[in-house]
Picture: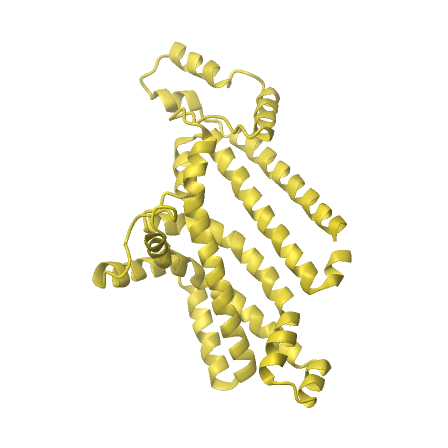
Length: 313
């Protein structure tokens, strides 16, 4: 098991390095002049040259990459070109917002998908068709549209939830839950459709296996057969799809944060990209990839526990 984890961790570290390196060089080849964008069109050539030297843009790109990489390994992601604030501080303020939203949407996706998938596989018939139809519609509707409808109905009209803003968990747990409920539901709708469909298919395949019929013939309760045996064997495929959906939820959170006025990583990323704040973009990319790698590592651990064959695959 330890060797299994070390292999996965090594692959994750390599992935972070490759993506961070590609992002650094791609942002260095945009052709724009960051110093001119910071100072504005009225700045003189001497001012632009001085600003470029201050930012280190007059040095070779490989030298700048090495300085950034060694700093990142020490935990120093640099400072924002536009606000002179530490990148770590800017990300640290936004990360809890995005993690709260994405984790809540992931938990909601897992819980609802298991129920829908199992019910559709076991009951079948018109109920299966109904659930499949609802899943198809939910997958097709854009999450920002769902977010706008939820905000209009439950926040503006009924006043049950706040329409905008985020409250930290440490400030008020109840207000925190209220502030992420509608965004999490809007973000999770499409993922629920995908994971529920996968769970349904996996459960149908497992329920047709000989060992399931044997367990039933021995008089085991239906609940025990479904939850202790069938669902556990169907879980790896669904869990793999859920881990992929987690990545999609991170990207989808960019739009949902805009809809509900949440100052998360998505909002910071779009603002930084629009301004050309390369250090902030790099920092957000690195942190996002690290989060994805850690989640995939956790999924691998769970898969290894559910199916020991995975550990030696």
